[in-house]
Length: 498
Image (cartoon, rainbow, N blue to C red; front, side, top):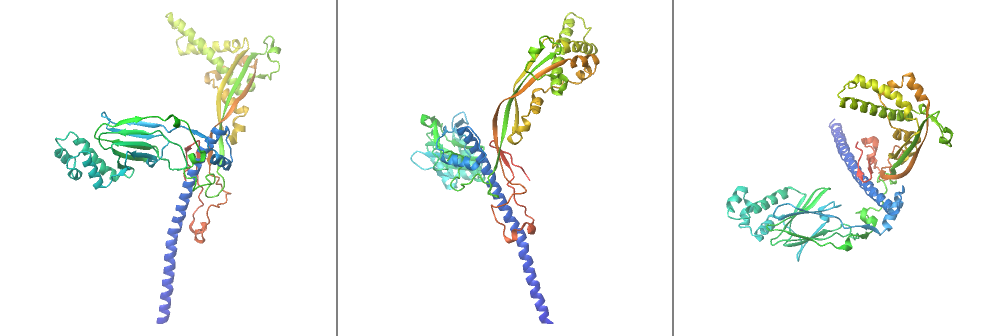
């Protein structure tokens, strides 16, 4: 009996261990899979954004877009004549005494891209307390060690006779705030420092203009990286900082390799046109913009010389097309309303309010509308609309740029309820039936307004970018294949969210 009990205990231990292993796996395996998914999604989004930029530059240099992203990428890697100007520099003076200067460059995404070079020395990181204390001493702060250990009130008392006490106090506060803020880095830049851009791609020859800052006191350089759009350097000194920018004309137009300019990690990632899950090319589509116009001529059926007027034209009754009919009635309405307004104003200027009431105006409108319905086409009425635009994805352009869609935008008119009531009257309906027209709608030009790049994932996709392990089966842990969901349209990311 004791042997059976011992055997049963061993089995229970084995079962418990197996359950523990399965429990760990049920936590760790999905976690690892989710981490891999997140990494692939990040790569996909980064690639889509970069390829969108590359496609736009390809259009700039060749005059055409191309849906074969491999072809676009190959062009970029072999194109060494992309004309670029030196990145723009923004110089901001932050105080009245010019002791605080802010520098920022366009198209910079990290403060490490800045290249601050003190004259005759290297840029010294002073984020340790000992180095910062030495910096304070070097710029004339009395009792720097005590200042670093004191609060604001104590510093004011300690340096009450010093004209720079507020400045020293602000530096001490800056040190402690910076130690809590990982997006700020403090350096001693010396009395003379030059600032330009240090490109992270060593083979990209794009250069910036150089700014020189000088002061009679050592300059504190503060590198700030708040966000991708908030990257700058602050330079602070006890004394006035002089700024000089001597533009090098040779940098105003530079030739660089397109791929090296667009893809910062071109050496590690040589297939930025592929979706990391399927290893298929991203899908490319374009947003098109058509400039459209129209010409329309309205006339009465008994117009003199009608044969010559309509020669070679496809004539329609106005009532055949509701868009054209509403457009014509809107013209009649506008003319009738104008006559009502002119008549009422004329009477009111004479001090007569006979037609000032809404009832009287309505009756006048009915009278003038009936008149204008025939008067407006006493002679053929020619009207045209030029340069309206219709936007469409290229996949829908046949429908969106069709004649029906052109009618909707070119003959877009709503004459309103009052006209709808007037046209029910038999006399007006007869007048309208005696009016015909001929018209044309044209696409003046079609151009590509933006490019859209998106993941090729769909329900029939085969995932090749990774291989599931034995315990990564979807049925085991319920982990869906990632879709790298998202797209980038003309450089503006707008990711779909699950």
